[in-house]
Length: 365
Ligand code: SAM
Image (cartoon, rainbow, N blue to C red):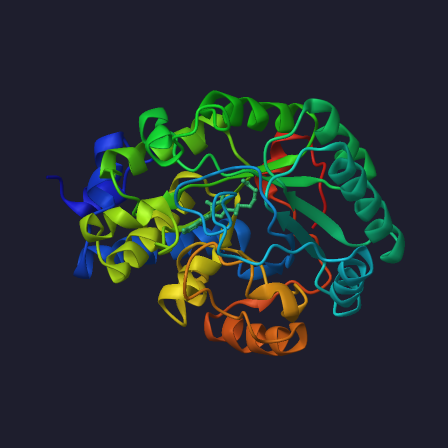
């Protein structure tokens, strides 16, 4: 075991350094968080960018063993928010100066869906006079689809690799007809080639996951030269197959701390990327997202999905803010971000500085 000050003073971490940092506690953990906080302030400042999140449908063709909206879960009410309600939510984000929105949904790749998203992207651009930035998180698609959506106005894409370790990936995605780790990786490459700011992420505290796996996830993000990351704790859902391993899991509190350490380490390793403070953090600790902002994250995704559908997008149990309207959400966010010594970058796109550097200053503040 090395001394923590020695590791934190290094300009580059080895895998074993990261494995050690992932397990720090007490004063050593405080040192890690102090360093990641400082690096955040020095490189991306204290501005926090909003991405109003619309979870537009929970219909999904995938069967991820951990996810509450997996196609085999027959116990949920499937919904598809009508276009006018989605556009209303986008208008709300625009009028309230959010700067950007995120469209997320279960995965579909049929023609109707692809056309519909294209229409929605164009319409959102139109109603916001081109001013709202748009991130999408709609799973694995063909190059043509990614290209169409980019041309229609989306400029950032979130596709979590879930785990960089294929063995672990296949333990939590057992249907090989539907799930392919190499395809997911290929999609990330295509997204980059098509000009998107590309985000990925992993779940933290999964059954079968080791500290080495998590260290490799961080090194994967670095090697892939990712622009944005959204990662959070795995939270079990009783109506999913992975629930059977709940007794082998670390406690929720432990997974929460581990997720914070992952964010802090990643901020030190990738100083100028955008890091989202995942909603799953708040499901464990009411101030979870604020804690993540303090130690490295700089993006937050207030939920602006119409309230009537929110409780049906339960990826995991105890999901926060399923019953409050978008306006309550904004007020609550402002107070929370102030608590974390942040200021909201109202009306800004807040594109990833990392993306700008790698693309000769494309992207917008
Ligand atoms: N279909 C898109 C995709 O696959 O990228 C976006 C929707 S998907 C539900 C969004 C993310 O939710 C996944 O990438 C996964 O990491 C996360 N998620 C699903 N179930 C979860 C759970 N039980 N705990 C924590 N995160 C979960």
